[in-house]
Image 1: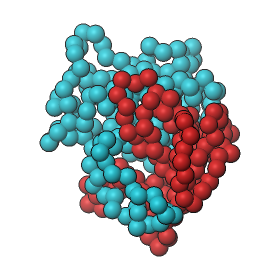
Image 2 (image 1 turned 90 degrees about the horizontal axis):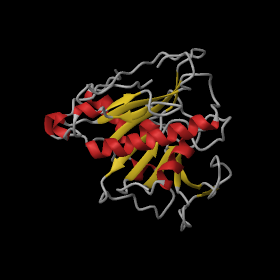
Image 3 (image 1 turned 30 degrees about the horizontal axis):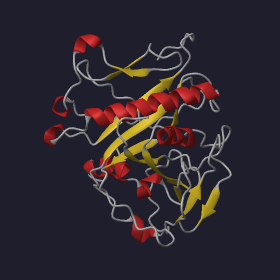
Length: 122
Length: 159
């Protein structure tokens, strides 16, 4: 157990948990490890794989999302419950947000390098 | 691809040998106590867009932990998520770590032992960087970019 409980927002461009043979096998075990270490982890990922277009902005698209609850005790995080509205969580249960956009649309850490370079990607 | 930007000798650095499967965040004993945030170098981004589809080195994933201050307000999730919740995001100033895993052998899916080792080391990286801090003023670092190379020590492939 970590000495300090960190509040962590975790995101990536691989999408929701897919199991080891799918496009997103890593974000769930990493999130699980952080939660098991005692940290407060919030996960926001694309609702489908957006690898290598993570900083793309779809200006005309409406960005919506759903809440996803991976099964407690799951090895790969698949097969969880999806809801339009959040619900109470049980012990050890994670709440994820799946957005139908790219990480660039909702991750402030990705927007900083673009803005610092005068609007151009490096 | 975001790649590792190593910190200088006077800082934390990623070493090779401490774990059986992958690198671990280590600090050589002769360097003394941990540096203060003001002593940190500005971390530069190295962005490579070339993708190696069949090479030995891959950027496997980019889980990006973003550390939020404890008092940071969260969106009031009382109705379905739509864009108005998500628009006021630029320049949050939140401390960020761009973390990726570099599979040095094969391709997805890696052995479960690789995933377990990478998650363990990545968790240590996040906790240690939080302790080091992001600096202040001109020494402020926007984002740490860290790649965790994952390979067997018995392999002849170098990091």
